[in-house]
Length: 393
Ligand SMILES: Cc1ncc(COP(=O)(O)O)c(C=O)c1O
Image (tube, rainbow, N blue to C red; front, side, top):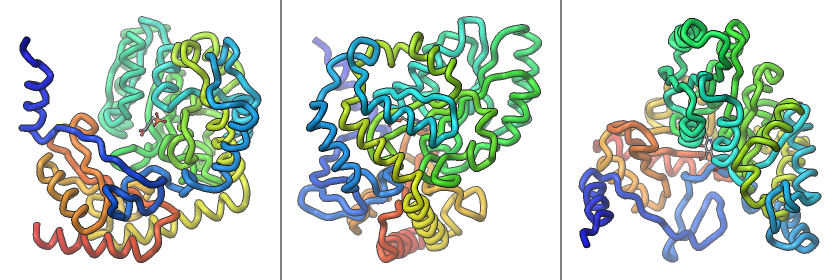
């Protein structure tokens, strides 16, 4: 029989789009071990260095002791254990919403939530650079989907006018991210809120890369811009700055009750392991504390230093000031991005090459992420290595 997969893999390889797993034989942190060699890790979303924090490890260990490893069933059957409910109460309190709901991942949160928010003839308006989970959730909903150019408020407004004209009386859902995962820039949230109010639309905001990074106690961009009440659906993940695993939706009590009844990735999937829920709760408690705020400020010291040290004021940054912990170095060509990642790896740095379909074809890049746990020397060394490489480009 013809081996279709081998042929397709070969085609991927020819376009420098093949992907491979890499075995990390250490915990997450600013340094990781691959094949016995230590690398300085600028590839992780563990922005606050919590993934291997003793508070989270102890919370997980003690919940695993008390509740066992697996949740045993979906949340609506018998999978809801005390750590899940404690976590949801803490999330709602921290985010300042009436209620919260946890999912097994951020991806599952998007996939379950978006189709529950709209029906077939409603309209979704999605930012062009939204994460795959939001795109997939929007596609799965089977509703009318329009994409607006990245952060283009004018185009969004004309899409909203179009929706009002062509789909009168239908629900319109605007979906965007607060910090864009591959570019690190911010959504113009206040302007989006203005538009959503003007057109009576719903707004869903994915705060995956803003949580723990932006706003007082890392509550995210909606809180920082003081528009939380206007963001109907606040999505986030427990898997990045919170150092654990899982996703969440925060919002009104009726929204959460509706999702419990309609979000299929919530209903038909086993609950988060209780130890993971307990670890995420420890992370939320930490972030909400003065010590958590200090850690976030420490992260910002590292972000500013990175911005200062990368050539061109932060490579291809769109503005003069750093806006998040993500620094894209846009190279364009896929093979060139792979080559640069390999060259950095030879120098002892782990920086991933991001290629299509994670970003557009011809927009390949290195995605540098900095965390609160990086030492200044490590950031300086990366800056020097990149400067040397860009001189020879
Ligand atoms: C913007 C954004 N949303 C959602 C997710 C999915 O979150 P999780 O990794 O928890 O599934 C990611 C993760 O890569 C992301 O970058």
